[in-house]
Structures are given as C-alpha cells and as structure tokens.
Image 1 (cartoon, one colour):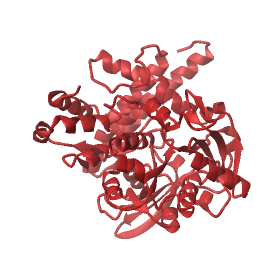
Image 2: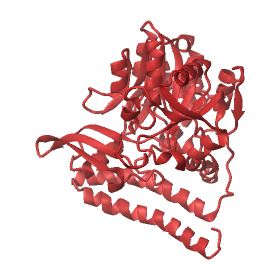
Image 3: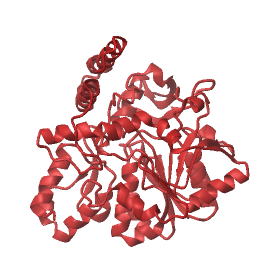
Length: 464
C-alpha cells in the first residue's frame, strides 16, 4: 500500500524523471492537483508538499488507482475486462483485442482531404453524433487562451467536429473538460492518445458516472508526445518568432506527393503583420521522429503502441502499398460492436473504402514504433534499475540484451530528449535560432554517426 510518505517519494520520482504523461487524470479526482505547463512547454500535474501532507489515505488511494504509473492494472488487464467477451473477438499480443482490421479511407465528403490520413477520426465522430449514439464529442480544438494553441473541448455539431480535424502534435490535458462532462447531461465520445484513453478507463472505474457518460473512445497511434516548443520551433524556422505563433496545421497534404511527404502551415506575426507560410517538413529541422526533438520524456515509458484499451484504434498506414497515395490512408483496429456496425454500414453504402487485412499488416505499418516502444523499452528500464532509479511497472521486463548499435541509438535519443529543451531555452533568451540549430545540430550529428557506423559495419559483414 502507498501511504503518505511513500506517495511523496513516488510523486517526486515521477516529477524528477518526467514520467508524467500530463493527461490531467489526477486533477479530475482531486482539486488539490493543478495542471500547468512547465518551463519546457510540457503539461505536468502539480501539488505542493504541504498539500501532499494533507492528503488522506483514501485520497492517495484514489490518485494511485487513476494513474497508469501506479495502478495495479495494466493495459492488458483493462482491455481483457472491456473486450474479451465481445462475440467473435480475436487477440494478438502486439495489437491487443480486435474484431476487424482494415486499411483504407473515407470516400464521403471532404473528410479525407481535411484529415491527417484517411479521414476516419472525424468521420467516425460525425457518425456517432449523427446516429445519436452520443450527444457530443470530446476532441482537441483550437484554444482561445493566449498561452496555448490547442485544448480539449466539446463539440455538439458536425461543423464543430470538422473544424477540429487533423492531428495536433501539441500537449493537451482533459481535466477541465471531464469535470464539465460530469456536470452536463448527455453521452460522449472521446478521441485520444494511448495514455489518455488508458487513464480515462482507470478514472471510469473509480467514477461510474464517467463510465456511463463516455460511451465510445477512439484511440490514436502516436510515436511520442511533443511539448509546445515543437510547434514554436517549426514556426520560428518559418520566420515567426516565439510568442508570435497564432495557428499551425501540422499535417498539410501536398498534391502529387507521397502521404509521408506532408507540410506544415503556420500563421503568425512577422514584422508587425499577420502572415501564413507553408513549408515542407523535409525542409525543416526537428521533423525526424526517431531523434525526438521536444519529445515528452514520459513517451519513453509506455509499452502501448496500438492504444489497446480504445474501442477503435486509428493510425497512419505507413505501408509501401499505401504511402504513395497522396491523400493518405488509415489503419483501423476495431474492438467495439457499435463501431463495427458503423464501419459495416459505411462499406455497404459505399461511403468508405477499406481492405480487410491481417495482424501482420497492421504490425508492419508501425514496425519502427514497436521496436522503440516495446523491444527497446527493456534497455531503458535496465538503465533505470542499474542506476537505482524508480520507474513505473511495465509489461516488459528490463534487459541489457540489445545490440551495441541499438543501445547507442537509445543513449543518443535520451541525450537529445534531455538536452534539446535546455538548448532551446537559451536560444529563445538570446533571440538566436542559429544558436539552437548549431548546438542541436551537433547532437543530431552524434546520432547520425551511429547509423553511419552501422552501415559501414554491415557492408563489411559485421553485426553491431
């Protein structure tokens, strides 16, 4: 059992090692917990020492049960509870439970054109609202607050849902919107990343009203979460200085280009005038997802690639037979019968186009993600244990059995994750983007050298 003294220690370990996913789950169950951006543009759960000492044992237990870092239940436990009794359900240890697996896109309307990939996220939310399965949807929308670009909000019309389309590589938290849901009549659908859906499931176990109100969860596949500085840095490279960015589209599709060759569209103030600029991601620094510029550190301590506790999981179809399609395609892992019926009806009516695929195809679409998130998590856990640092319990065991090159890649990724925010902070103070490009460029070069050594050794028939 975690008592007050243990909780204070564990809270400090979570904070010190940046294990907090910033979902806002703790702020839902306890008003003493506040959600704030830290100096690096990451959401963190904050509670001061004196308030920790005032927590009752029941409050501590409630916080423990609603955190995926501390709960006795992991994603496999929750998924089994939710989906194991669904008729004709199948199980794959990489994907979790599934009824159907698809790759495809939406034909109806402009959902595909306006989406990040195949348009299924917005289309499914629209279908749920239109069929009156839900009264509103909880998704990420533009924020009206000065200190942030996006936030979780509620949409009650199809136009509002469409306005919130596309992936946002930007931190959000859902404590405020979930508190509103608990006090507002109606049933809802929510869309979110693995940590958000998992902690929502834990919250719903603690609060039956939340379970009753949120009927459908749409899960996204995401390599890792980003801080606010990622958007800020991309805009700075386009001439919009920190503090002057008004809006960003992280996934602007390019005609006659593969779906992986997308651009950004930023709007902000340059020399006193509002301007909109479009640039290909390939022309900008920081877009290499493997290097992980401005990665939220907690992303390195999850083992859930396929959002296993969501009713349906959506991701990009990063597959050679689909990536050449400019407009993009989704992978779909369907678990909930309600969602399956919507998909079946869409196929029957010819408003979506999907191919039935097997679990290997879905796995291949995110193969690099699996390597980082599951296979090499073992080494990251090993390093924590070697240095006698507390870490959350995961479904994989710590291990040092990794090749030399993959260990060094993990080491460099950790260094980039730790150093880049500090270098960027100095660059902003100096008002000098070139300072950041130069300093971060040295880290990128170190990272790239590992791959160069690996390639040379491979040509010589040496495995490293």
